[in-house]
Image 1 (tube, one colour):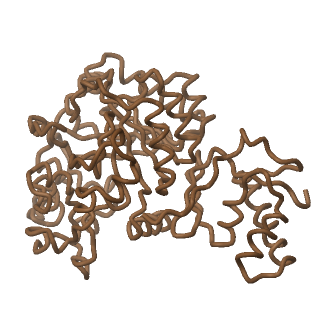
Image 2 (tube, helix red, strand yellow):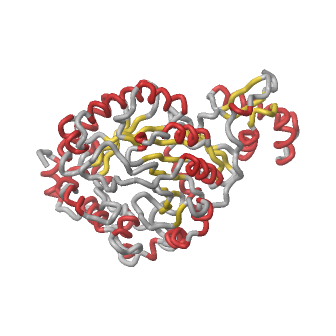
Image 3 (cartoon, chains in turn purple, orange):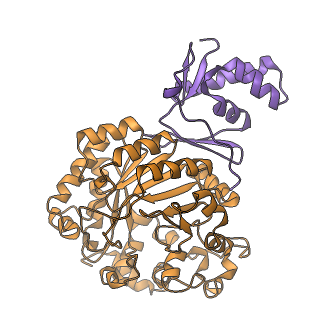
Length: 109
Length: 354
């Protein structure tokens, strides 16, 4: 898939903390902490947007990066995380009933 | 992994993010453990709708680690709808259960829902000893069956071994059992007073001699010399907090009352009366607990064992002083940090019945 729709795996534990997404996997309890760009992709992975759309609307709007570089990096991230089972990818939008709930705003405590 | 987790916990503590939430779904239980701190009358429990509201609020507060416990949480008829809702909210759900109600369908459901960890108490490798503690005949067999089923479904299991006079002789065999089963093992020598303040349970506490043996057992503590070496006090007593309770962690009782920790019955409000967010951010009691620094502990701040002490503010509170020492932890620190002649430690480390 060149430019898939992406959705967070619903079986993960996740939150944002100080602008970083924190993810815990069941079974092996592996812990991930994402940087701000990866967090941006993770939060936007609602099953209704393609990677290119997220890059254009979120990454390029919030970070000082050109579209080509951002898309390349984002696709590499998606490939890595879908390989680990953290993100799901598809050619079509996901059924909203089967994707993770909207990611909440980063709390201030 | 451990370093990253420490960093995340520390960050949440600095930001006062409620990263860790513990909810007891009920105080009812099918066991009657001799050391249990709960009163098993539990008539006024949060409903599924109440809990779904709490889950949504907790998610908004940044909660990641959600512990569901009891009593025995699985005695609730709506346990699975509650669990399903908790998992759907994106928490890393840890379940504390005695395991006696877990069969193949329940194990399969836990795996499907993505439960992150199940902790089951095992008091002995001897079924008779275990069942005498739980007062439920057959409980050892059923708990062990549950551990095997869960493990076979790939769910991380922790065997917890609360240590008391009735089972202190068996801890090494329970640890070996966990190893053979391929699951994690943890122990706790602290028997806390009952939640209603009754201290009768103190009779169950292990002796200082037994505690000395635990702290000199390399299978439990690693290098005993390192474990028992006094740590220096933190550089800045003004900034260091005594415990994470109320800083990045809180507890909700079955009736909805919120306290900083399950072991810290300082009521901060009730989720039936106000939102969890409001309690977390504005409760005077929660803010009071959050304001306390090591320098505010009138006795402990000048104690030379402060650096390595595991003082529990909840136990101190139950002893009557939020800023005072907890005698249970004083004793543990005294035993751990060389307040015992070295010759006795050598004798103790050679083993024998406790």
